[in-house]
Amino acid sequence: RQERFAALRDKPSITRDGVEITLLHNSGLIADLPAIEETGAAGIGLFRTELQFMIASKLPRLAEQVELYSEAMELVNGRPIVFRLLDIGGDKVVPYLRAEAEENPAMGWRSLRLALDRPGLIRTQIRGLLQAANGRDLDILVPMITDATEFREARKVLDVELKRLDNAGFKRPKNLRFGAMIEVPSLLFELDHLLPMTDFVSIGSNDLVQFLTAADRANSRVVRRYDPIAIPRLRAFKHVADAAKRHNVPLTMCGELAGRPIEALALMAIGIDRLSMAASSIGQIKELVLSLDLQAIRGQICAALDEGGDPLIIRDLIYDLADRQ
Ligand code: PEP
Ligand code: MG
Image (cartoon, rainbow, N blue to C red):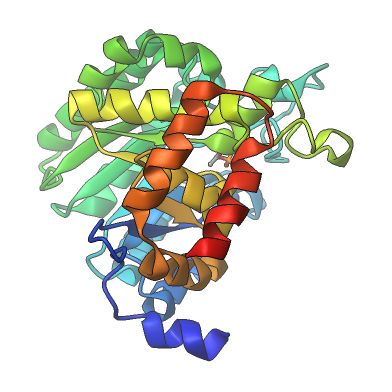
């Protein structure tokens, strides 16, 4: 299998009926990045910057962060890399940042909430990213936004840092894109407000599904309830995909489900054409993309979404379609 996948490396990622699907990596450690030379992926769709903080023994200072981010940019060798601002808390513990014990950490004082209340952390991080870019392109992604106003707050921090950058005589990034993660359900109901403020969006399906189903993403007892491609969840994703198209904002799916064939197929069928996944999944998803007649599948999956019914219907349908292809 590995050899078969390696042979696909340089083939364009296009379905049999001509739909281009962009395949990207999720990663978080510098050590993960060189894998991109082997998979042939188009870039890094999600760089979880907190992972490097989690393995450090103390808070990385500005100079260390600049070094880290510029090393990351060099390793991807001109390909795009989306740096997600620190997503600390919930399942991601940074031991030297005092973590208050919370009843419900996934819904607690985490990620952007913590960052907006104590802006020193992301101010330094954004400064580090801008300096590391040093005139190159820069993509920054904001996690765990509850309301669109929080995205605007984060943007204000960026604006202040851009002025500082100018005053200190550094170069601005050539293209600077500031994007929003959609992973809190409330945002689904103000997309028309959020999307005009963003340069790109990314669905964090791990969290979005956890919050839509009220089923812990890491609890195996409730995994059946967590099904990310059951009809109500797919409708939610399609709602985002349709809105992003309407506003002409690029959308990536960056939860783990994009790396699983059945799930990836359902996502492509509802019109999501940028999939970010673990590096180890790229080969099998690329093989799937190349074998696919998307148009044929799209109609049937969208009809099933309109009709509704058993939450498992999409899985059955896809097994059926796969047999016939
Ligand atoms: C997600 O929530 O889907 C996501 C990509 O972010 P993380 O898994 O790091 O929370
Ligand atoms: Mg998340």
